[in-house]
Length: 143
Image 1 (cartoon, rainbow, N blue to C red):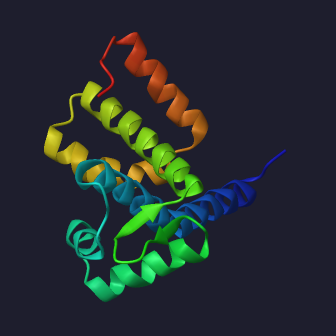
Image 2: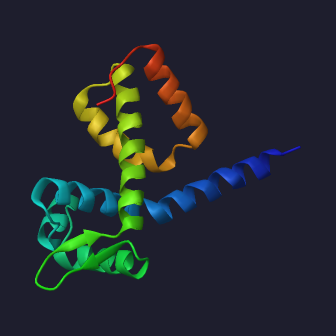
């Protein structure tokens, strides 16, 4: 039987783990989106879309490289590895479910854009599946 302290500790641990991975997931998702849109992802574009400086974006990209998620090509921009593409796709899918769930609840588009960005990283698989079922019951299109 789990007591209140154990339950709370587990919740805080899950939040710390989500915080540790959310930036990596966001960058992988964005690099994938930029690659689809422009054929490649440039550091200057990453920084602009993330609202950070180029040196800050470069530090995160270096972490992605170290983890085997991103590679540079000579005289080209950034590209996701197969593992990076898979991570970005999972993050994008979670984001889509959370966004569609909030829209189905009647939350306005601007608020959905703000709220879904953080929620996608912190929602459990169980809750995410419940959101999917809710959307399906309401026959909401998945965008």
